[in-house]
Image (cartoon, rainbow, N blue to C red):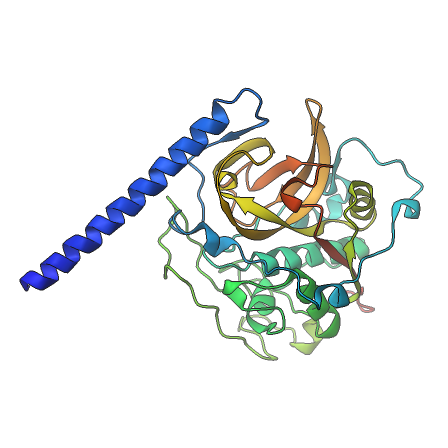
Length: 344
């Protein structure tokens, strides 16, 4: 091996060490700042299994800013407070309200080191709502794989997309079924290898979006035809930036998709009711809101993330409610499913 190559290798190792040291120092500072503040309502930890190597958080933030088409795809729904005569409970969990759909509602996804949160959370919410609307008769995971790889109008797959365009895709083109990586479930299961600290090694540091498979199933063992497997929504909407409107729609129709700003400290969230404390903005992230509650007088949203069950509260997190924390109440999207006439 030449002297020049040895010098280049040594330089590369030195850079890697400096990067790792910087990440470690930042993590220690943030975790200590959060945990040593008696006024905080949440705890932080560096034991979370975050997809990727923990140095490229922005890679996981896959939500594009709203553009001119966002409200055309998902217009703001008029106030929904009058839609239900039932008083909203202090604590609510969709998994308990609709136990017939618990297998979907309780599912925690893993987007891997791909910025597909916009697709993963949208498909998960649509799956939940279709199950609820069908009274539990259609309890199948819909394909985040197809949405992430084939919705060109949505954006750039693993490099981000628009939640509003995702729901418009459901209405115009439909979506087939598809479960998690190597689940063997549905027409187009998720194809990206799950990876994270302490779990597995990512196949690529910067994953490319898989190719779109058009009008056919990638799961050779799935016997249902592609067209017969498509599912649609009848309407798509954005909810007003209103705590009551979001709660009412969730209580009546099921989970909703939300996008919010993520700061570095959120990556180290372990438990409790999160509110921003430390760190720079990493980007915008999409998740599923399952319910709400009150913890020691602090109101929160109950949310499902897509970084596996090794992160947060078994894959879930709670975030301050009613204060538009990190703009989580600004961008809430959902739709009303079209229940198949011939339920399988």
